[in-house]
Structures are given as structure tokens and as C-alpha cells.
Image 1 (cartoon, rainbow, N blue to C red):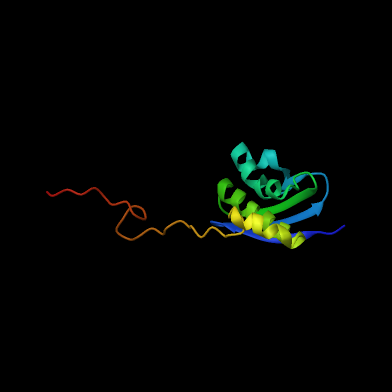
Image 2: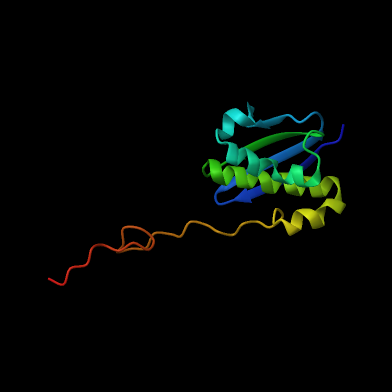
Length: 128
């Protein structure tokens, strides 16, 4: 049985993904996907590349993910699954690329600046 491994990233989350031919199991950090992600929208995000490729029930997905919150982790898992699918079959690349699944989302949290309470927020201004 052949495994296809890839790494996906989003914000501060890093997901190590392994897809293997199987029946459609989804395991994230040794827990069922539904228990781990808790929201249907995040489950949909994770499933998008497999549905685009039409391979939802023909692969088992095993993921180790660290860092960030649930939303960033779901994005990282999607990115990793997409890369693993391209490794499995390079002809899937154009369909996945058009939908933007192969592009690593560059948006990151802006750093806090000194003299301000947050990155862009300012303390209350008073003339007197």
C-alpha cells in the first residue's frame, strides 16, 4: 500500500498529511475529524480538495497538525491534502490550482506596535 505525504501551512498552523488508498477515514491528531474540528464549515474546508478531485471515498487521510487555532489548522490540512493529491496524480494539479488550493495563503497576523494597544488600534485621543 502506497502513502502520499505532504506538509500544509496556514497562519501559524503546520499540518503533516498522509493519504493512503482506503475507504474515506479522516483522522486528525489521532481523533475523528468530526470530533476534532467541531464545526461543519471547517470539515467542508478540509474536504474541498478531495471533492474537487472526485476522490472523497477512495482515500484515508491521517493528519498531525500543530500551532494556530482550528480555522488555521483546517486551512493547513486542506493545503497538505492538496499537495498530497498532486503527488498522487499530477493531472489533478490544474483543477486544484484554479480553485486556489495549491497557493499557500500568505496572510499573517500583523505584529503589535509600541505605543499602541494593538497592531493598528490607538489609545483614545483627547485635545485637553
